[in-house]
Image (cartoon, rainbow, N blue to C red):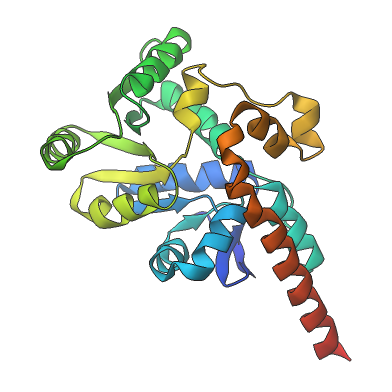
Length: 250
């Protein structure tokens, strides 16, 4: 069994002390064991949302693997003396899993996005990995479509279920259904299908390296501006927590 390092606590949300390689290896262990395992990817926005959404916080803290997806989370860990090594971006995690899946025969299900996006993402992925097994469905589910999706997943071997419905819907959907399905790993992946389908692009490597990918995404999606209010809230809360810890040491 691959042991991950001790979880750290960022404003009441527990995050595993893992780098990308360790996270991938742990997910592969889940696939080999074939139990139902939820993987979550907290960032600053998600952690702030969890302060008010108790259900979301409980789901995040009960997940089998919680990955630090966000430069803000890594910075917060350093301010709080936890010192995470690196951000593990959800889309990077997905791309590495697809590469491993092509080598080892893992099967995937892409659930989410607007109609046609998950299918386009599948087609783009299969241009690179011809033999990869991927089923898809868009994320606009009514009762009948949800029943169809659940039946399709249950009737077919799926090792990794990727759900891109946005936070917190994707985490709540997985929490509700994952244990009932014969799926080893479920991961909420936000807008990853748009990137895989080449509807949107990642920030240049330099912007990623200097932790400005959020700014690049904002330029592509101005409607995210309202959600960005969580970033100053997150920073304020982390500074408060840092001061509280320093006062306890006096």
